Image 1 (cartoon, rainbow, N blue to C red):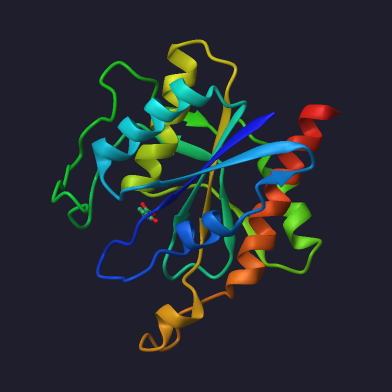
Image 2: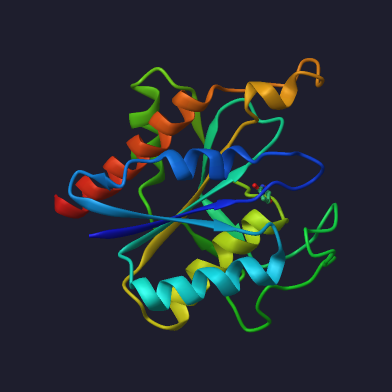
Length: 204
Ligand code: PCA
């Protein structure tokens, strides 16, 4: 089994993004599944272009994308992606789509095709705070989640995918008083736990 795991590069004035910091430290093999790690730019079009190219080359069973949700307290497993780009700030290639459909002919929304509740429960069982999120926002993260689900749906591919948002790292909040953060090791454990849940549901 192959699992493609993506993490974004830094954006919005940050010098690191916990997403790729976590992704690059994941084990290369989890419960017999090959973990393929990919850094993607925080850029609307480029990010999905790179993911689609990698999906075509690798032919993964799963695509799990990780992004930073600065200000959120816990690990949030996204339930749904919506067909809209509405950027609060320009992306890393200076694109700022406003109220723009991701795919004019796509569905309004897609549910994640990974077991979101089981993942949340399993992360919580390790005493790491996690919950379901019912909105991935309208920035590049939602765009990536929607685009992968849409791509698999339209091409009738047997690829399941989903998105997990993670909080800031402690080093990012040194000058942001009263902003939640989490340590890197807990985030790595959380994402590896999510991957284990995905693998075991497939084997079951
Ligand atoms: N978080 C942003 C985009 C890149 C990232 O890590 C988001 O939540 O849309």
